[in-house]
Length: 226
Image (cartoon, rainbow, N blue to C red):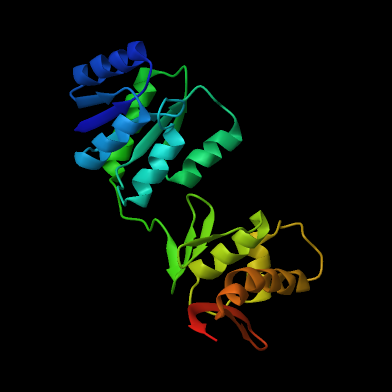
């Protein structure tokens, strides 16, 4: 099994290399994010161990760029940061596992074996409908290559629509997917956000990608000029 270890701390990097080699792994190492990204892109690995805080490119940027390039090698991220939002960011950007320093080498190796057994199934880097692109890793929306600024709630509604592209989804389905389960307000809030999105992703581009299906809900389709 072949593993790439990317960490800017020489002592830790060497310790991991020695321990993994002793366990039968073939190990390559890189000391910064840029070098690690190029190695991950140019070689075949079973798994990548990736630190977050590194020079040139941090770990978040590396895993996001890997997934953008459709490099699906499993990634375990190492970090000294143990906040739940840091962990959530890592998973949102495409990481497969997350371990906080200091950690047990036994646990690290067990998690790497689990990732290798799981393999690297292909997963879409982005969702698209015509020239509308929604990038879950970067939380970005683009139309014809032009970035569109949306709020967090607008993004969540749009991502749900594009994940269900060409299917009719009801207001109730959108509410369950996007709003808190405790929300007990008017379901017309969905209509309000659909309006916001149309003004941002359709109107400026003379397109119509969000359809209203009377009595049923909404459907996102490939945009038609109009």
